[in-house]
Amino acid sequence: MEYAIKLNAVNNPDVSVRAFATVTFGESFKITNVAVVEGKGNKPFVSMPSFKSKERDEHNQAVYKDVCNPITKEFREEL
Image (cartoon, rainbow, N blue to C red; front, side, top):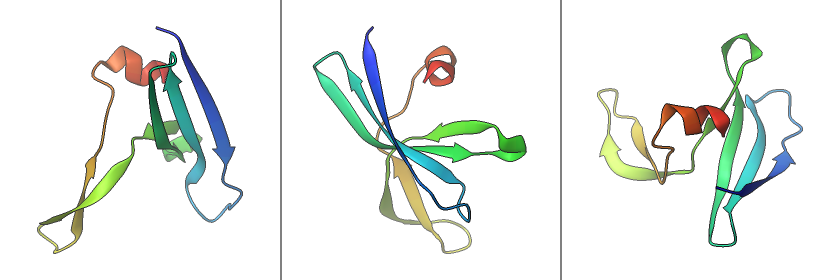
C-alpha cells in the first residue's frame, strides 16, 4: 500500500503535541488531524483524529472517540 504523510509542526514547547499529520493512501483516501505526540521518555506516538461524544466518564469528564484507527499493531508502528 502506498501512502504519503505531510507534517505540520506545532512550535509550542509547552504542549506534548509536536505536529499534525495528513495521511493520504494512494489517491483514494485521506485522514487529517493525526497528532504526533511526545510520550514518556520522549518517545513519539500518533493519536488518531477524535470527536467529543455526549458520554461522560466516572469523573464527569467528556469522553472522546477515535474517528479511525490502525487495525494491526504492525501498521500502527509503521504509521
